[in-house]
Amino acid sequence: MQGKTQLERVPFLFAKHPILLSEAVWKGGVLPRVSLKAESPAASVVLLLTAAWVPANAEILTRVSFVYRDGSRSAPRELRNKKELRDWFLATDSRGISPAFRFVSPRMLEYGVFLIEVTNPEPAKEVAAIELEAVGDALIILAGASLRTP
Image (tube, rainbow, N blue to C red; front, side, top):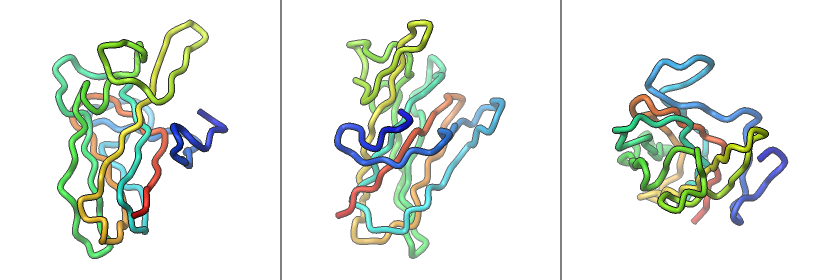
């Protein structure tokens, strides 16, 4: 995805390295939670996410909250396994959620990244940050984020 600035007509600013989230102990910079600075009014946030590994019994993969400038925060929106987000392997599996971006590795393995829009329950409030929290042992990859203004 390097070099891309838009995906499905949504402008993104992609990080040099994706953010990895999990409650499990993984090697190499995996965080249980991340806060993305926003400081803007927002109707929603569009996230470019995937799950690199998901336990068989996982129901909730991550939670997304809006943190407002006044110090309050929204109730977390849960991103459910196989509903809003799923494992990235076999991206075009017709039984699953369609990926927004699909790629094939040099070994001919297919992977996908998913576009998820989370609506701000209080769009009149200025958003200070978007917080993503890992749930369980799944390994979540955040590749990009974009705010939609009201």
